[in-house]
Image (cartoon, rainbow, N blue to C red; front, top):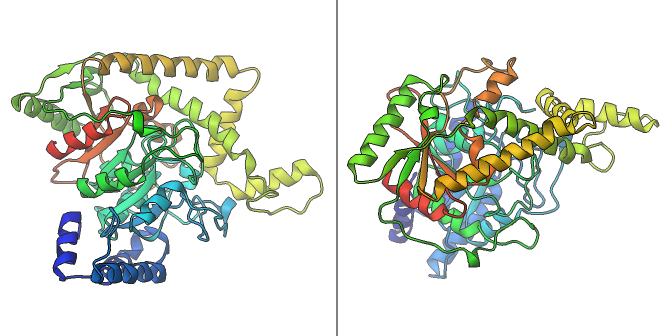
Length: 462
């Protein structure tokens, strides 16, 4: 079942119980095992949790706001006494000593976690091909990628193995796979969901995101896990954030995006069609020039690789991490442990980040990228002072074939051109699936910081 209201109605009517529901999802997981969605399935634990919830229902006890939801968790989000490896040999067999704030809040509201999903190593990738566990396959066409780095999270929803999936979004890692797999994927405002317990890639970009086929299930999950967390200094105190209802939100779009040479004709047509439908439904829609499109990807990769280089310094095989070497020379020890523990894409980004932070290139690259990020944020502030929602494609095209871009990392990086904008500015953004006779794709809505309610409200009408 893919609809939360239907699940709850059937639970209340006694037509199903939570144990039966979990068993249905477990059967789907086994049916689609060849897609390589799950690294680990929490079968026993999920059934035990379901039995407890059935008892609460039978006794007419109060249920949490997320009862009826079964969820998967990306392998970069920690759950105490469970393995978490970030899809990397570096964290092989590492068992978390803590539970992320987001997952703990969800569990407290009676969600059931069914397993952890595959992902690109340390969330670095756009295709889910950079995992020590091998690639995840797209359920719509197993010869194509599901997107990344939360590709398996998207496929877990796509193939009905759960109702909701928790992923992480650093530059589009929830929205891009949502687009490729035909599901809904949302990245909330930066700091709206605590990052405590999320393995860091780039700390000023990372955000836990949510995927589902059901906008209501996604919204319920967001409301349950959001808010200030004393364990994350960047989390937002939502008591000071005003929630507004918009009767007729205004939209804008970038002509530079419509005319972008990498945008496929099908997605361009869908975007134009949606613009005309919005106008016909009485919405104000205007074209707004954005002359920084070509700077988005370079700025994003300079800054995120710099932060990754710093964040991944801790993995040395001594404090924790994969240990291959027994050499007494400290430099050789570090080199051998990190060379064996990290995969090719992670090494590439660490080296890029170390380069842009080096003495001779810090001003030329890192400082300049920070200034461009500021220009992007300022320009978006002006745009959102006149329009409520920015409409964009999520991706330039449908999912590419397995192996097609593995040897061309620059081409893969450029596929993120329409998703990195939200992370550079910390904006909330959501990818919504569009009708397609072939492979799925999504269109994307972005709003001003903390206008997450607006995005969800607009998404229901979209």
